[in-house]
Image (cartoon, rainbow, N blue to C red; front, side):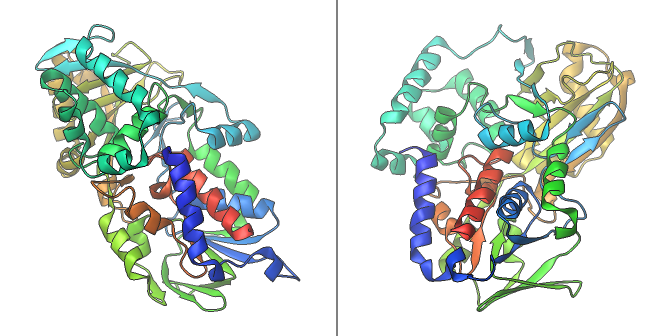
Length: 450
């Protein structure tokens, strides 16, 4: 059973536990239910869009002054835009691609060819690889994945991805480079990631690990198209939810005194924000324990705007064993002589970098790249930095399922609580993608509709 089927079955099982709280349309003979959605990220917007298209009265409440949540397009100038939050659309991301087609938003190839700086030596794409022995071994591992039994998967969930690699013969240079590359996918050291969660992602994703496409003009364009369909008048930004009361109906109170009432609620916000709300009645203890157990990845995006694209290749990214350890061309396909590299750091490195000045961070970049690309200081025009580990609403970029959590924490987080349905990328097939957030929002809307 792959992760998609597991998640769907978990949702059905959870729904069966609280059927008394699920009120189908048949219980509303005169009108369809009024639904409140908390959170205007992709999960909340996707839920609201589905409900609106079914004729349901929907109200979206958002704490931030903008919609989009962790999708955060940032214009550099009139020609260039970068993503400080959610970025890629994978080849297998059906719903995002369908909506982009519906709204006339072009998707452009954004696959990269990875350069390497390791132990002071620079290697161009195609000139470096893992050892033949490890490549052959990993292929066997991926080929065997569809045949794993459920007990095998649960056993893998009991230890970390680094240990899995070591146990399967990955060592030395292979292990060090694997750890550098894989940690960029999970946002923390692979010594903290469930071996099952990691293996499932690599076995089930595209060749480029779903880093395939980007929306031309920025991901915020899709956010705005969804807002148009939902109706801007139905979305309340800068409304911070402080209290939720569930009786026969749901009452949501915001810190500004505004109150909203509805028949059902979709809570599509990060787990940190869920726990800042006063719930009446209180959240069940198993759900609270699951919220407390789940961590979010610390990611820092440091965007450097250069007057020319010294890296030459449009499909440029680079992994290094220095800090920061990952770079990628953030303005690929955008017509300009200028360009932006994003220096991407994770975990403890990200937390440390977030406390430094732009000048300090730029020096780190120059120290890493200049020995191989020449003098770059005169080309730097500006810098922008965003650290998701200190984001006031998520305190992390995306969810990270640790050791022993996939089969225990995830099912608890998906359970409905009275009239509340939960959604968000932390409940998705893979964490950290817009597609996953959208899938969970639409699943929550389907539960409401019955």
